[in-house]
Image (tube, rainbow, N blue to C red; front, side, top):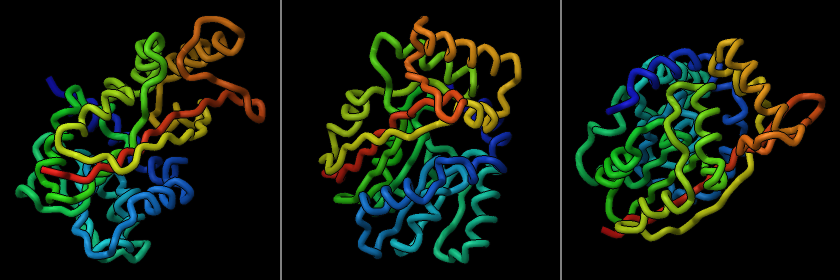
Amino acid sequence: MNNYNEVKKSFGTQAEKFASYHMSKAEYTDYLIRSIQAKGNEHALEVAAGTCICGRAVAPYVKDITCLDLTEAMLEQGKKLAKQEGIQNISFVSGNAECLPFEDETFDLVITRLSLHHFVEPEKPFREMQRVLKKSGKLVIWDMVATTEELRETNDAIETMRDNSHTRILSREEFEALFEDAFELQLEETTLVPVNLQSWMDLTSTPEDIQKDIIDKMEYDLNGGDKTGFNPYIKEGQICFDHRWLLLIGKKEN
């Protein structure tokens, strides 16, 4: 089984709004750049790149970067923004992360962000990224990390209500297990990213009846009812929550 159609449908809808959403804020991309510590001579790849938020941010710090995504509408936004920003060492490829169209050991640096929770079998894109990465190259994964075990099902169910392309958020242990056979983990850090509930649902054009259902669940949680796993809170009169992003950087050993 795969999730390709749901991904293309969802991100085709999000394309024009995605680049201006909170996830592209400089504070997050600056943190990523500092963490990667690129030397400037890397051939880099961003997998499931979307509008190439990471690729565009990293481009000034590497020799060149290729951005690959399944959804052409997202890549078109990335191309448009890269042109506006005057980035010349960037290229764009329409392709499937589970079958990357590159030779073994092509890249010095491979990055993916907020992608693995859209794959039915996240091991497949992970092994493909491992394959195209050179020995001693860096693999960078920045993705949401699962809430407590007892609330994972509820949390994922709400994520899927909001976006049908969502599959399952991995736990820290599951991420670590992906890296353990062929990588030396050099960095593993969690960042809390504040999210406005309404903006989060607007990004995916969530239907109004489903929005209401999600809001009801969040309000019930806030009032002491069943927990959602989101730990919602009120900020400036609106419901918000914090996504937990886990950044892992591994050096390929074999």
